[in-house]
Length: 386
Image 1 (cartoon, rainbow, N blue to C red):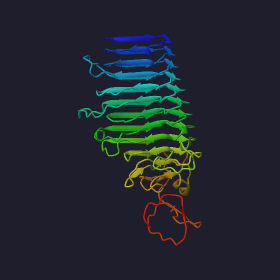
Image 2: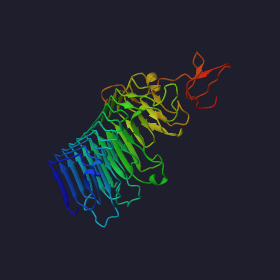
Image 3: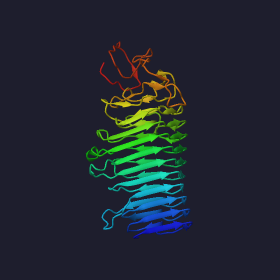
Image 4: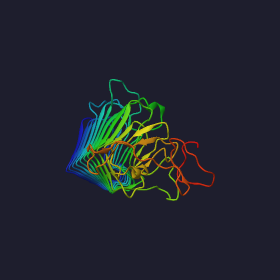
């Protein structure tokens, strides 16, 4: 293509070669609106070219054996796109056997806007966006702008959103509803590569509702830990009534990858002013950061109780496994419905006991402990020498 492709009020169904709509090369605008793209072998839409503007709106993309929408970029093309933008809006993406929306990596300024869509019944992740791994000019603070907002993710068999790794990007995920997911909802992670630590990333996950989901976590949050140019803020979210459990037998203890509704994997993640209420899950927040010298900021959240002694044991961190970062959850909110309340418990009042009367020991020793001779049982890994 050299200019544009328009697909309007059209049914594309039961094709058996690559995809329903296949853009194979060139550059230009692709506009798909008010159409049905269903039951094709391969992807619903496969757009592989040098770039342009892509707008998919008010369309049903369902039952394809591959991805719903796949966008790949050919940066070696002699053609050059005047703009680079992907917009998917007011579209139903359901029951595809592969990723709902896949956006390949692109190392020039680009915009991805996925808004007001419904993702349901998918077998693989609902949204997956790849990042550029190259060191870019300092004139571009963030070359990729991602906005994912006002979508509904329901009854999918895999994660709703995967952004891994997330670098060279400014990202906002807001006002989405995640319900009845089977595996989990949100995965934002860095990749342990030295070259990615110098790349920028700024992420805000805010005003989302995560309710009645299952899996090993609801939100897995992490960037490249040692990067001063990367930050993730998780705030104003409602994470409630989720059933999170370990993928293996409950007889085995969690090590450094505990199952919890919210897990934090790097110190440049801030979990602040959220409502977490998951009584059927063993924990509310878990540390996945394997570095005991760091403290994770998870303050001013409602954590399922007004009692500090109850909250203490629903936070999985250094006191449970000596090699994990500690989670700072004080001050914590005292309102289960208002993340902006000023009512909060400001000071620590609960001091856990290391040596109980039934000769059960365990926990983190902050001062000095002396044990009498004899046999003891332990329930947690001891963090410091006696």
